[in-house]
Length: 139
Image (cartoon, rainbow, N blue to C red; front, side):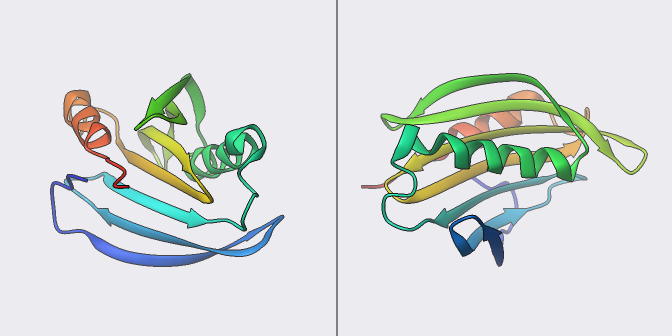
């Protein structure tokens, strides 16, 4: 994962239908946006149904709520041969027009989120895409 600045580590407890889960995140904030990767380990088998589609939806919706955003595009993708999803959304952070570009992928019982959230036009889309594409799963 290529972070353009020094990453910080954070862990959060998420209350889910499967119980309390820990989301581990590494993020940095170049300029006025944030780039990060997070993962959440789910109980064994919880992500097996429809490749974790319900959990992908929940992760997407949580990020959208953070920016009071709406999806402009969403597509199914593949990362390292695994099913995933990519979204582009626009919303607001206070008075600022904000963009969200994120990818989600399920590997076994782990859900990964790779995302950029920031002020529109603060960072070139090519730089955001380079960051998102730098994510690799090591097996």
